[in-house]
Length: 97
Image (tube, rainbow, N blue to C red; front, side, top):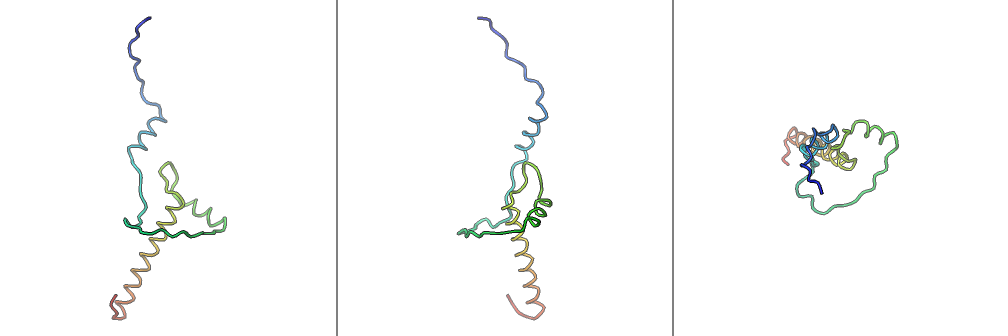
């Protein structure tokens, strides 16, 4: 039986570099609260044209957020905006929160 030396590794292919970059980048999390508590489920029915518009603006790629995460981020943004608006309205009218 002949003994061979260890094969030399060539430079990583473009696909391997993309995978290494993806692994190095790490994942993201939604902006949801750290302590979500009990989860309630809701069924959301959207017209196809709305879904297409969402998919058009949702980031693409390996690390793109899922539709669920995109919806959750959108809801949280809206809640924060409305809560700020509500506290501004109360301060304008001399009300306390």
